[in-house]
Amino acid sequence: MAEQQTRTRPSFEEIYMELAHTLAERSTCRRMNVGTVITSTDYRKVLAIGYNGNAAGLPNTCDRDEAGNCGCLHSEENAVINCDSPRSTEKHVFVTHLPCSQCAKRLINLGGVKKIFYRTNYRSTASLDILKSVGIDVVQLEKRA
Image 1: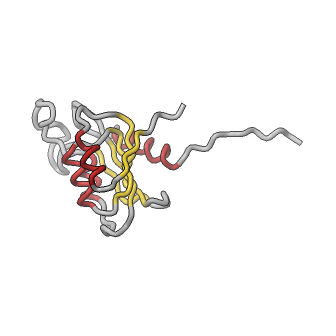
Image 2: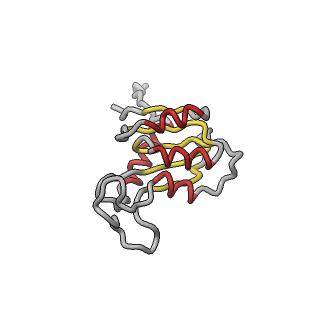
Image 3: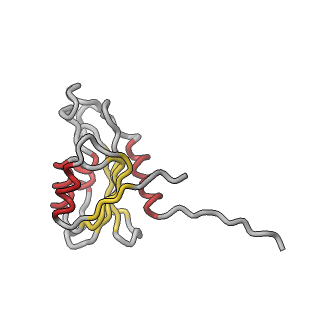
C-alpha cells in the first residue's frame, strides 16, 4: 500500500485573506493597494468584496497625490457598499490592512460584524479601540509559511 502523503490544508481564514490580497491587485490607488472580503461566519458564503480606487465611471487613478487624501474610496467602503446582506446576518471581514477609523465605523454600521482579520498594520491603530468598544474582535493573521 502506497504511503499517503500528509498535506496541510489552508484554513478558511487563510483562503479569504489570500482572496483579499488578490483583490488588492485590482486597486488603482498609487499609494496603497487594499482588498476586502466579507463572509458569513461559517465561511460558506462570500457576501461582498471591495478594493480601493476611484468611483465607478471615473478615471482609474487617484484624484490627488496627497497621502491620506488621494480621493480613492477605501476597500472596506466599497465592500460595505456592495454588501446587501441584512444587518442581522453575522459577518467576518478580511482586509489586507488594518482598517482606518472611518472604515471601522463603516463596518460597525454594516451590522453583524463579529470579527475582522487583517494582515498588515496601518499607520494609525485608533480603529482597534473603536472596534473593541463595540465588541468586534480584531485578529492579525500572519502569512502562512
